[in-house]
Image (cartoon, rainbow, N blue to C red; front, top):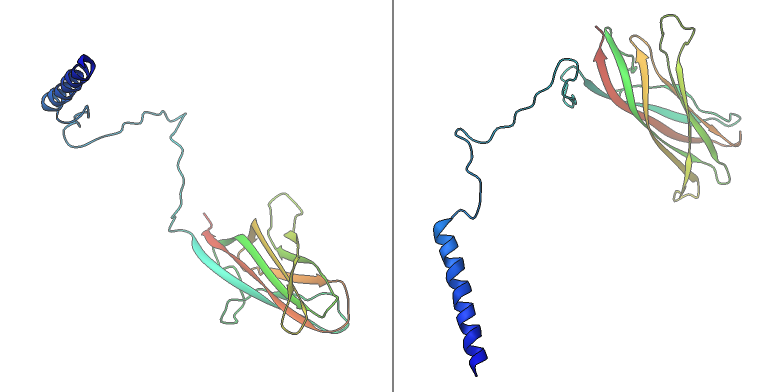
Length: 196
């Protein structure tokens, strides 16, 4: 019978100890903030600067252009220039360079045909090089069929493609056959950057 009395006394001692700690240190061990609020000091030299990321540069002007695609009977490819959604040509404005970051596409073809690949090209003159442009070939993936049984193909590809001012970008989708008609579209999005 003495054991329950020992446990009761031990519990009472623990309870009184905790109560005493709360009275003595009511903030529970929190550090006192410096006057004027918390601060962080970063020390770097010019040779070892703090890395930065410019995520909302006002010099970047976003753009979105489309290139409608039509497959004619007798042709294995569609091809057209990009345009804005109002139908005007998607030419890069004076004093700017276009930076394309995403290409998406869809194509609808007669049953049994395959969309082989998507080709997107842009003109960029690089001083000292004979490079007249950049071309991306992107695989198109089957995505099922539409309500009429036509094959649907899609592609999405993040890229980094540049196009200089007063130039336009082109898109073409290639297919496995030359018979029948089909359609689709290619979309690009990115931003314009001002030239120095």
